[in-house]
Amino acid sequence: MITVGGGVILDMKKRRLRRNDPDIIARLDRLNGAPEERVYQMVADAGTGLIREEELGSVSGLSAGEVRAALQTLQRTGRIVQIQGGYAAKETLDAVWGRIEALLTRHHESQSLMEGIHLGELRSRIFAASPKTADAILAYYQQQGLLRIRKSSAALAGFETSFSDAQAQMRRELEDYYLRCGAEAPTNAETAAHFRDRQKLCRQVTAKLVQDGVLVALNPDVTVHSRFCRQALDTFVGMFADSETVALGEFRTKFGVSRKYAQQYLDYFDSQKISRLVGDRRVLLKSDK
Image (tube, rainbow, N blue to C red; front, side):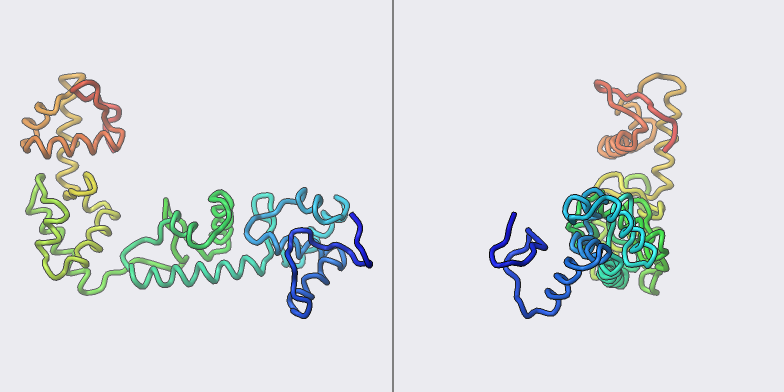
């Protein structure tokens, strides 16, 4: 590769650049500067892609020793961070965290009963990188004490769910309602209709009670109190003391519910890997959830 009229090619990937833009000039100066500045700019250009040492060696025009020495200096001075074998500029990570913090703050304000935002939603709204790379960066924020990750959700480290007076009242009413409904609880739509003008509040608090284990979602449409789900499970497991398999009709009679509800409980047990349907009967996989 040669140039006509002099000059040095610093970046083959960029399109035409504005010659008088100070940010562009500063970037080109770094690419044309000392090894540390060149490596830093290439790490910054990679964004959240977590560029690796061997990649930097292939595009920087520097020897492997020069790249390694530059990376060590940049890490020591805190300008870049190593995350699972790749590198990101500290400035980039700070900017991304600012977006995450703002997103989570809004989510916590509007969904104060939820543990946090779903990790999949957080990844899609913040990162262009692969899920694996995004998870590595989120783990870095957690290590820094900024983020809390539990199961499939993320929250600000200091966030705790809290009930307003109205939510606490709804919690009491909902638990009492589901206890009165018994093992044959109404559908979620019927429950929401029961609370009329408080349907949105009802759905929010119901989701929290399911999350806390007070209620159990047998399926997307039906929720029961955990007390009755436990009774159903104890009844179901107990039936295997006398038989290696249990049929739907046998469970329905033993537990004393309609066929529709017996089917919902058994399908739930299957989904939890407690049982498995073989033909028209179920076998027990494990004795508890």
